[in-house]
Image 1 (cartoon, rainbow, N blue to C red):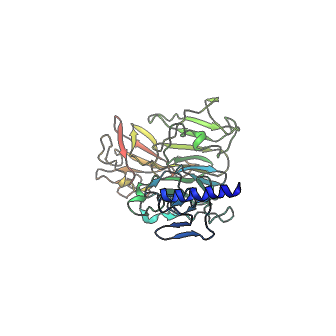
Image 2 (cartoon, rainbow, N blue to C red; image 1 turned 180 degrees about the horizontal axis):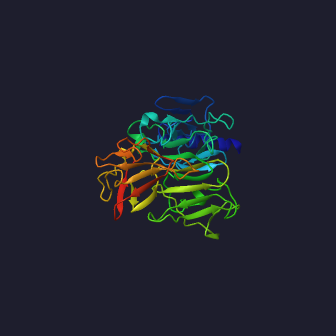
Image 3 (cartoon, rainbow, N blue to C red; image 1 turned 90 degrees about the vertical axis):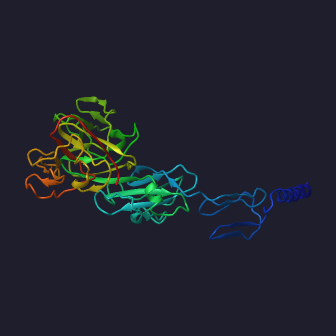
Length: 385
């Protein structure tokens, strides 16, 4: 019986070799820069794989999967304990690139600033990146610690890291925000899908929890002409509730990168880590008369003169008394704010030193007040530069 089975196996092997010329029992995989061989002879159901998507199954069912075409890969990002988790859905593991250590508002699409991630070279003790596991990697020790800002992109294997592909790749990132006791005016510099933009999803339970009187709060200023602000507090169950309705979940409190938010820290200094996607498409900025609490939209650092407000219908350029103003709240424990006004020459000058150029920039994760002195509504688009 065993002899008969062996004869059938030989006949089947010869038949397959005739049907698929070039298919042989020799286990060999060739690529442009490599050749892998199994010197022990035929191995059934044991693939040889090469970077770029080549896959060769030696033996009876020999075939080669062609290399992956150049392209970009969309990453998902999440906090996982002390670490940042990056995930993808493509079957081929991508090349990961990251951008870090350049300062506040560090994001840029300049390809030379992006560094290949050395996957598998890190550890919980030393930091760095984990090996790939189940279509994901960890960037160790980056939640509430590590770099102040890190951004990530992914490309298919064999895709060059150049001025064509890096700018096309969608980016995700993380930013650490230090919240001092008092009122911290911040930006949430990421874009979220509906349902993923809630306080529970974005902030989680990273702030000080308590009851409606003792817990940290987040405020949103929806009416520019009023200082009344909707706000929510972090309960001891790790969820966010409306402060004026302590038993009702703040599920409709949606976070927007064009808005600024006040984080009221009622405890000691704390660092929180926000994660999300960098907005790739133009974002709309809407302003109305009064004090608008605004965000930077993108995790970038921009000079006030480059914001593009000058010349927009509804924006008022004038002197120190009549021009629109931008306020920056640097100190959580104080409401005194440096501010600048928009002059008739299209530039921003310090309000307490008219004629002196503004000495602060528009950068994440800082939030700002924009005081609109005109009438009507301003609606303009901001584009990532």
